[in-house]
Image 1 (tube, helix red, strand yellow):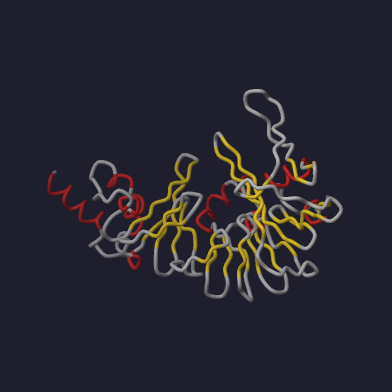
Image 2 (cartoon, rainbow, N blue to C red):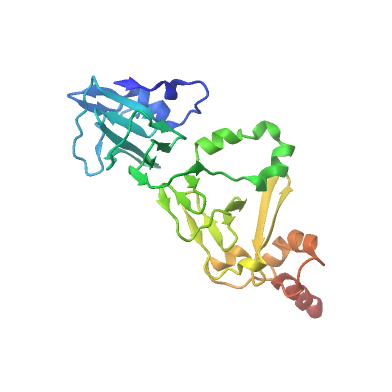
Length: 288
């Protein structure tokens, strides 16, 4: 079993897959991982890597090659490699790419994405993407002030791009290889937990983007403040903070008003007095 020079190149960022792949061996024409250790016995698990249903996949030891962290070639067939790690379980499996792959032009463009002269591909789940143009996407401009303050903690942009699950064409966004019809390529990250494009705002939980249906996008305001060596992101529309849409509640005077004071004090005079915070401020003044 060969490992592509791409994976061994010093400029290729390390990831879990690149740690696992060198430990994989072939037994009875099946791939066996020798990376994970049983929590109780402390012995290597040495599990076979099958397809998602658990059916065995047989490899030609003389004609198979890891092409990237999430793609492996077996004879003339391409497989995507999926790795799912949870607190108490690990799943590893292969999925066959249903396409005529041109291996002469095949090349990785990141940890999860690759291309040949015909298509683009996403490794986990073996997704084929029919686009003439696709590039990796990553945005973290909300951290600019933080990165200036703590440059030693900043991960190079090329590494973040390489690890990205997001790719964009001229007018489409792909998240983990799937077309997201409700997301526009104007997408940008506005803080740790929220993204926005020109039309919508999305919650982000490290696994997916979920559109906040009731959020009034034209009145979006946000900022990120560094307080006590920690970054605090505030996101709101004219009606209420973004997180209030999660449990469908109204902002309160005890917590939300105090939390959003830095944002609305900073914007005072530049936005409408109809924003919830300014209305609440007047109510508090009357009560006093």
